[in-house]
Image 1: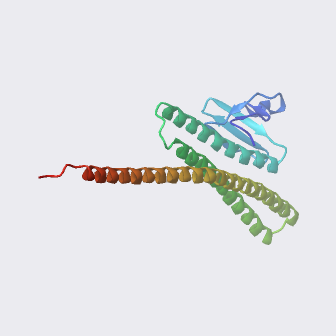
Image 2 (image 1 turned 30 degrees about the vertical axis):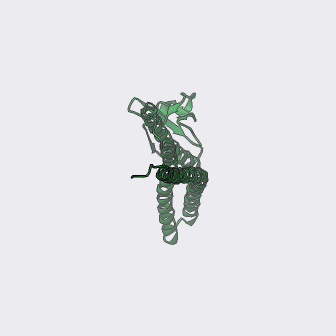
Image 3 (image 1 turned 60 degrees about the vertical axis):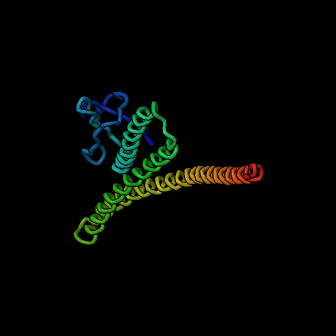
Amino acid sequence: MPSAVFSPTAYRNQAEMAHTCRGTISLHGALIHTVDSCTFVISNGGTQTFHIKAANEVERQSWVTALELAKAKAIRAMESDEEEEDNTANTIPSEELNLVVRELTVRLENLKTCYDLITKHGAALQRALSELETGDDLANKTKIVSERATLFRISSNAMINACSDYLQTAQTQGHKWSKMLQHERDQKLHLEEMVEQLARQHSHLEQAATRHRPSEY
């Protein structure tokens, strides 16, 4: 999976696509869109535009899918870093709980991104299947259906991996939550025992004071 910096064969314009590689691309704030069956473009904040050429449509879409997920992760990672910087000076007792929520939120956003991609490729596959049922040029339409099915499988696999990641994180953090709750319960029981002990001591002191109180004449 690509990280926040992506470095396939990137060019500043279409004319350079037959020449050397141009370097790396920051995905944060980048816009990704396809040009044709093998080419897609990444525009970074209006200052840089890179043309990426894949070997075929399936490879191109595989990269686009991976880049969209990596871009979403890069944005959320930056937002998370900013939140951590804001909270460094004022650490609150529930910081660990907030961290758990943030981690689960990141995983959930990954699931949403995968869902959008599956919906998109599923619709494209359905259209290709509908076109296959009518008209001529069966061989070409069969090839299109096969390519759409491959793209749908790529998106589905990404969704499965994201679900597995979310489940693993939820299970891990769930164990942490259980320990935190158990600690809170133990503290509560300890305080209750202390209060009961103080109440008994107070009662004993009152009884002792009553026994030793001078008799009134």
